[in-house]
Length: 304
Image 1: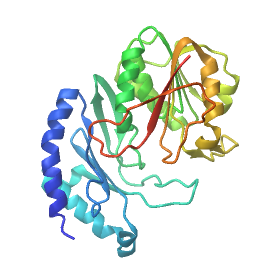
Image 2: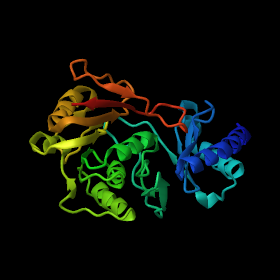
Image 3: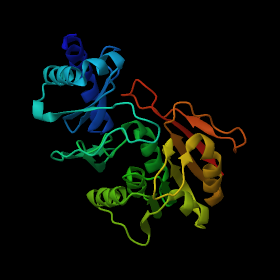
Image 4: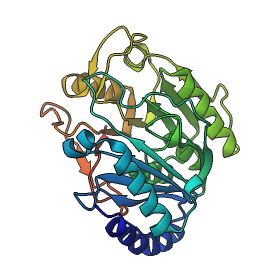
């Protein structure tokens, strides 16, 4: 299997994508999204460093992923005109339910700073499968930034705080960012600092079990973002969360915390997800960005 076809596709894609990204004001974007079945990879550019995740099929797994990753690397170098040092390739291997798909790397960490609609974000391209910025959520982050002025903002399952950065940049009067991970909370604070903000009593970063926290919180918010995992079996949580089973409870707790006229954005990436019919009517948004071929998540807007 020659890498020429992939290299040619990348060379074709990069011209239009770079021009589009410059117009949009983003420096992290998708170049290739499993376009061809023989090349099941997702390829992104993060400030001109190329980040690849391979999703090998059974035949490729049986043959050994080294051949696939070597060919993909060659195609990126040829088609995108980058050096080997600027191509990072990872492999997503199927795991049992509840297991992490990619263990922390023991190699050198590669950090880059990317820009998105005037905001800056630290991305780690080497240590985990994900980089710290979910590129497919870009349109919803932009929407939050445009709607945040003067509002009290809550970000649950906040990951590295990207939604909060956009809310801060949009003039939110107060923000609360909640995640169970110390790593992600610290990362969120670094993202704040990159943009000239800092955590303080008015802009809180809270390390806590989101499910327990939203169950006892009595704050009132004008704008809420909730992007839970498909499942979580964290020992810190002491419980198992499944988004299909538990989303109605979670959404109702969030709606309870909304001020009248407030907005909740709820999203998740569980492919078989179905929203509970008993919930308050919601609008499903078209939230997949232009540079993505596949729909990786779904997003709904609730207004109280």
